Amino acid sequence: MNEAMERSLSDLVIERVGFGIFVLDRAMDVLMWNRFMEDHSGLAAEQVVGKPIHASFPELPRAWLTHKIESVFQLGSSAFSSWEQRPYLFRFDAHWPVTGGVDVMHQDCAFMPLTHGGEVTAVCVTISDMTRVSVMQRKSDEVVARLEEYANRDCITGITNRRSFEARLRDEFLRWQRDAGELSVLLFDLDQFKDINDRYGHAVGDAVLRVTAQRVTSAVRAQDTLSRFGGDEFALLLPCTSLADAMIAAERVRSAIGDVPIEAHGARVRVTASVGGAAAWPGLPAYEVLINEADAALYSAKRKGRNRSVVLA
Image (cartoon, rainbow, N blue to C red; front, top):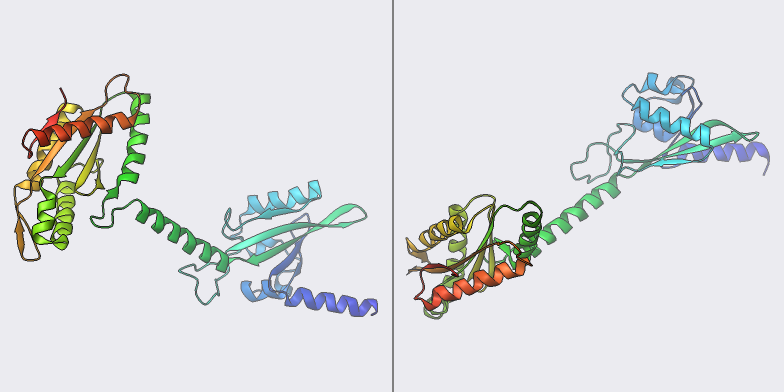
């Protein structure tokens, strides 16, 4: 194969490859512009070559691009920019059939030195269409986020579960250790809940749990965390709340649950709750101690006749 044919094939490949190729000199003038760049920019090579890149594309990030090109000239080594760092260099339309709402092509950019006689004479820039990858990555991230959300939610009531509650309590405990202030926890469960399941069935029992969660959520502050701890037991985290205020909240919880019977699947169910409260105290060694103290107070409320709020003396 002679040199002319080799050059012809090389030019053909450059024109037909599925990514953008253009070349800039140190003055940021365009020396070469391939078919991909023509197709996506709408500007033919003769409209761009020989002119400063910013004359044809004033919207390009001038300072960033100039720095990238200059660094290749000075260091003589390649540079790279990922779509994850900068979604695109050129604002080309996205042409994937399903882009998931992405209108602009996401691009990876590589900046490679072209040398002659040991000196960098120009920089070759390649533009790779990463739109499909970015869309798939976003969808994957969304799936992971949903799975994490499901992992932190109780499937019956829709409120956070014990795993999520303890993570939030751990964070609040660390904040309390650092900043002092107040921190309280309430544990409560539904009195004679087993009898409700036995008498009316689990469909009614599940409805009672859901309505309980809804009523308590409406009765507490947005910054409080309500969780289903397991079975018919719930936990309520009260940041920046003294024990006295926590017990006022406990009475609101009892009232929200028990003042009006719950109607579900044709049944009218009278529900009451027993509540145990505890608050952080100086020297509290671990957040688990707070849960244990609230749990002990809850069992004290049960022993004293149920449908009441108790703190340990």
